[in-house]
Image 1 (cartoon, rainbow, N blue to C red):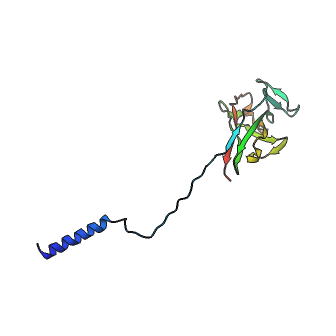
Image 2 (cartoon, one colour):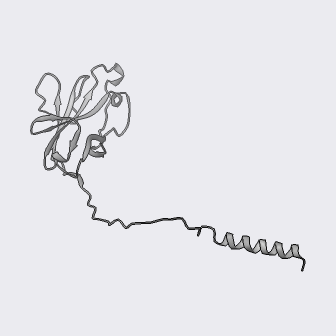
Image 3 (spheres, rainbow, N blue to C red):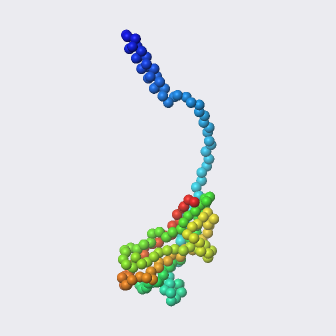
Amino acid sequence: MKRSTKGALAASAAGILLLGGAGSLAFWNADVSVPGGAIAAGELKLSTPDCGAGWLLDDGESAPNDPYEPGDKVVPGDVITKVCTFDITATGDHLRATLDVTGGGFAATNALTDDLDIVATYQIDGVDIPAEITEANGGDTVTATIAVTFDSGSLNATQTLSATLNAVTIAAQQVHS
């Protein structure tokens, strides 16, 4: 065999040995084991609401405790309300949650439903609260007033129309601060 062929074979063998060792080139290194630990999640929950019976009508002429009966005719500016109470379970360090009305809406839409607005306000121990709770509210009872307001600026297109309100849900949505 020629010397050049032997040299080429030796160079190839050396290259294969170097490539085979790729990734095993040693640099100094060290590691340490960090112990694990228990992790426990908090809880955010609303109890089943107590809403009493029916809705109330505030027509601006009588107290807002007149029962609203299906078939009663509302006019622009009227507000139909339902008052519900529920308990809050809120545990967890720096827990924050917002309260909001979800669901609701109407079975079908028309000019009347376009002018009906659904909002809720909240109280704890008779004091208005923003729609935000924290872990400090765990165990509190919230009074939510759900209001369906017929826009006082409604036009004639809403006359004689009707609407069916779907179930309204009050949701607590955890937010991270």
